Length: 340
Image (cartoon, rainbow, N blue to C red):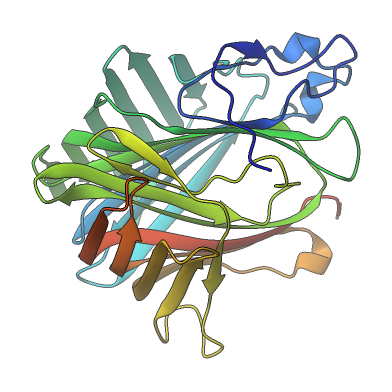
């Protein structure tokens, strides 16, 4: 049964266990790592942004894994069919914010990044030396946060009471600013460029797999986007499936990704909800993949960008027709328990 949280509450009880797993339309969950009964260094904390359109996209992440921190930057050129991703490691214990406000900061000899979050506005600034072929990377963006509901979820795992996943997805932010890599400069404009924030905190098993899809833009002159996904944790109390239309969130139960056997970018995917209210075909454009041998540890990722076509039905029965709507879908498998 889906458990909607409608008022402010702590995530943990006095024993450091999840108090009331569920989902919310706003940031009602109060996360305090000091309430956990395990070492905070076991927690994984990240703040991820994707910004762009069907031509150019950028992605940036500040990760805190306790024993080390990491900043990752990506340039995705969908027109010319290539992507570049670089990660820089540094000190951990970054004191990430407890919610979607506050400042995230990473600094090392090679890179520096800061995410400043104020009411109604997110500011992203980042620099990295030798990002691509000796060229330095510079990013300077302002994201305008609309008046909108969002997807917030707290999920348990069946593997142990200490495991949990606290996550927010904030869609439909409008982006302005620029990215510069050597002589390459691209300017983002708020009338055509959108962004999503993936805010995550948790302790979870070393071996895991998740599916996630996201899109943000305009439909019929109104902000429209969605967050879909599954596979990560015990979803019996809440799933993360929502569409956002004109600032209002519309909740779905289960959605399944049907990925073609031919490969991640070889044929269209099909995403459908168990009640048929969400029914989309996803046509791939670019697969940003990270390949590894999971038996030796690491992460096997396929973040595929493309266009969505299909229908979704609002809570009041209104049917929205979706066509040529840009977004992404991913399949990620991890094995962080192996040490070389």
